[in-house]
Image (cartoon, rainbow, N blue to C red; front, side, top):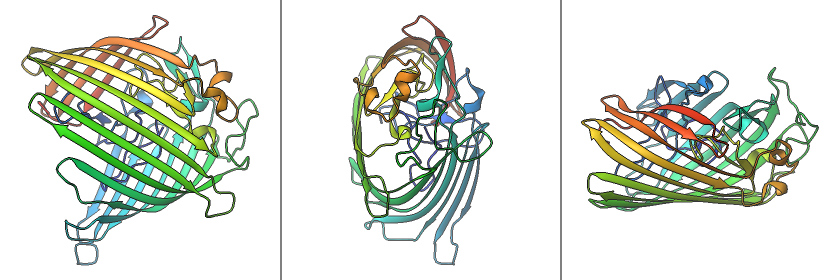
Length: 374
């Protein structure tokens, strides 16, 4: 789980298939419209009616010419009830046909409920075990020039990750006495090389979108984590008369050194609706499928039917400390339901009603980043 991305395009720290952080603007957190022909953008932090703590406010400061030569400085502060994220990004001007470089410093504090939280109310929400993650990162991101269908970016960053309790004190073990870090110490250090590529083919009546991310932990500092983490999402949208059908499939894998907080967490509005954040499970592997069928009801009003399913593919036992198994998470979940979407000038307002495999129901409320008709 993690906070929103900076305006420079630098993505913040991890999340389930979809808390990949994230795109919010001041006030309520917003998520992109998944039904536009351009395809669903990267997942954003979601606002659920079941948890007010996911409402995020933003303060953004921008300087268009810091030293009088068009150098850009962006400072972004995102603050929720229980989490925070600060990003400072500096970008030098370069010709459009050259790669764009950004120098980024970021610090975030987030409750670690997706992996270490316990499922409650028949898996409809996740309770806190008092584990939070403090992340400090410094790095460089290089965005390649965009072509008609392809986007590509590479980043190198140093990360210092420190588990803390609710009082802000460093801790090394969870509620049951299992290590919270890979090193077993009060913190983990890692140098990460990340490559992300995207492909989008948009036509009048359909779209295809592919997003591929790979992170490689480099053993360049003592006790640095060495790992390979891969995630790929494929989305397909088809217009069927006045209606629209969107399907997506997300898969992920991590091999090598691993801390529990790096596991793929499954469950929640960004992956399997009807479950709390990470309440389905968390593992070294994940496979998540989503399907949503949208029908116009009136001007600026849509209705939808959806089904989500996700699995850790039996990999929960390979996560250090087995946090998912100790919390009694099933490892596989199915959610389905319906929703109503209102297109307004400020964005699309969504109200979704989901039911999980235990016949327990959850309402979700969110505001998409796109305007009406986006």
